[in-house]
Structures are given as structure tokens and as C-alpha cells.
Length: 251
Image (cartoon, rainbow, N blue to C red; front, side, top):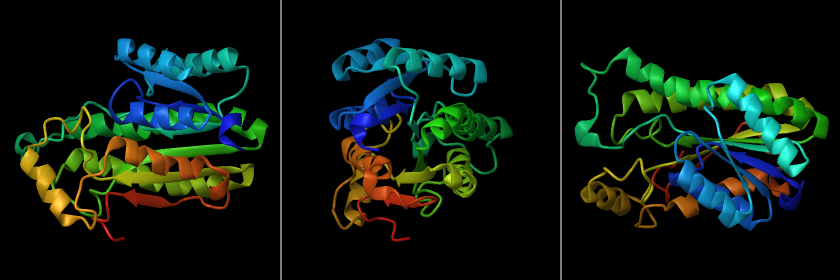
């Protein structure tokens, strides 16, 4: 299915990386649903800019996702064909302020698992009936390179994203028969999103110096990579994790 035939839901698109992802899909001609939880003003502005639809919903609440999908289907007159699970539970990439191994609480882990794993599962489950009817579906999860290279040990965030990779691969195995692919795109630190705004400049410089490209990937560059998994050129690719971090992680 070409981009101009797709209706794409980007969760957490009211700010940060999600905004860049929504713009990337809209630039290719897709119909875009801009999901947000609290960033109403920026989400509405983005939707107006790209000709999309902004819908408030908590991705962990099934009833709110039902309402979101219904609104999208009524607005665009078609089912959602493509889901980007991007939304992030509140988190700041500040290594100096992170919780250490001897003090981090299970509540912190639970918050990340709720936002990352439960949110992706809730959203995906609501999308499946429409995708099965269409005989086409693309689910793209946003991961991290930290579980391969924990340059900063964010225990709760990294564990939740590692679990999301496992869910990516089990869903791919389960849904391939329906013509639905499930993949992950994993980035490193991005210059700059709301979550990475607290990162000291010295950390950006250190990561840049460690990559073959000698720079830190931008949100727009990261968003470009997601387009591959929604494009016709990835029709036989599923259950994969593509690392987009300027070459920092090699496997």
C-alpha cells in the first residue's frame, strides 16, 4: 500500500520525536492522526499544518483508544492502516539525576512498562480489526539502542523498551498471516527532543565523537527511517529492529 493510501496513527505526536514522525508521514502523502495526552495546543497546530487530525487519548486506556479510532475512521472515512507506537511515559534523559540501582523503585519500572508495553499493546489491539479487514497493516514501535549499549544505565526506561522488542517479535510471528508486519526502529540520544533537553552538552559531544558520522542523529533523521517499514519496499520485512544512531551500535 502506498503512503497516499495509508492512514497513520502516531502516538505521542503532540511534541518531541512524535511531531517529526507525523510530519515525515504527512510529507509522503499519508493521512495522519496526531495522538496526544496533554499537549493540546501543539498537537492541534501540527494537525492544522499537515492536514491531519489531532485526538486526545491515553494510550493505556482501551475506552479512550476506542474513541480515538472511531474519530479517525469517521474523519478520514477509512480504517487506520499504520500505527507508530511512539508515546513515552514521562521521562527525562538526565544521567546525573537518574535513579541508581540501589534506589530505583518498582513504581518507576511500572510507570515505564505501562506507558511503553501496555500502551503499545492497547493501541495495537484496537488497530487489528481494521487492519485485518484491509488485509494490510504496519505496526512500527520506537525502541532504543540502550539495551545494546547502556552508555547511561536508565534501568526502568531501558527495560521497558527491551520488553517492547520482545513484543515486536512475538506480534510479528502472530500477525504475519493477516498481512500485518511489526517492526522496531531504535535510536540513541536525539538532538534534541523534550526528553533529551536535560542532557548536558558534553554528553552530546561524547556520543557524536563515538559515531562514524561524528554527529548525533536528529528527530527528523530518525523519523525518515520509520518510513521504510511502512513503505512497499518493506513488504517482506517483519520482526526486525533497525538501529538508527549514526553507527554507534554495530549489532
